[in-house]
Length: 265
Image (cartoon, rainbow, N blue to C red; front, side):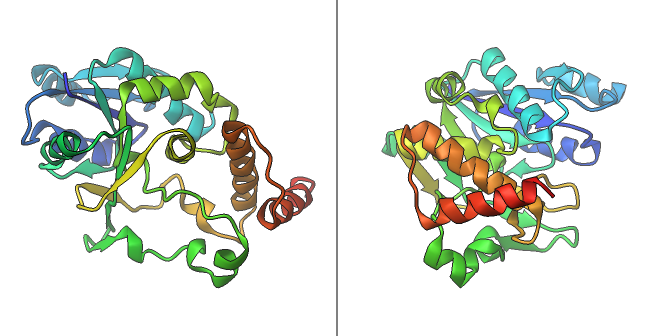
């Protein structure tokens, strides 16, 4: 089997039907769909019957970790264990795919040897206007950051990720991903693959990312929030852990000072 789509969801009943439907209608045939759900309630009976009829593998369980990043990580780990595809496409339950996504990714794989790929998602706001992620304002556009701080590999979000099965298996074995509680799987995978394998960023827009008040990463883009610096410090530590080398530069020293100051507040 070429692709396994791993959908992780938690209390996203408002979005999950569109997410699954976008996978069912792919213009490509050699793939499977697995849904890992930790919602407080199972999807309603009618919807579960629909899933069963379409031969989608559905797994419902209680939350294993209270921390959302680790909970998401665990569902994707289970997806790795339960799936069969040579490549895994990750999808959050509030996002959805272009109907051409798998077909276009399959074409890309015929042209290049790829371990890890991201595509630039189209951001979908509540007013249904679409906006490319490259136009989204965040701390990386700050001149101060560009001058003094490390430039991490570009991260487009979990739903943009295509990864080879053996690479994801290697990641869970070597990177100790459950150790880094503030780092979601998209951040960890991007750094891990950046340091060990080749990263491809696919230019075509084949993923749709919903923007709403419950998005996991919104607080991580604000310099004025404590969580920004906690995660940045952990990101440095993770980078050094994977690289097996500590780099004392301005970014790391300043981040460490701010981190320890905020930690004691």
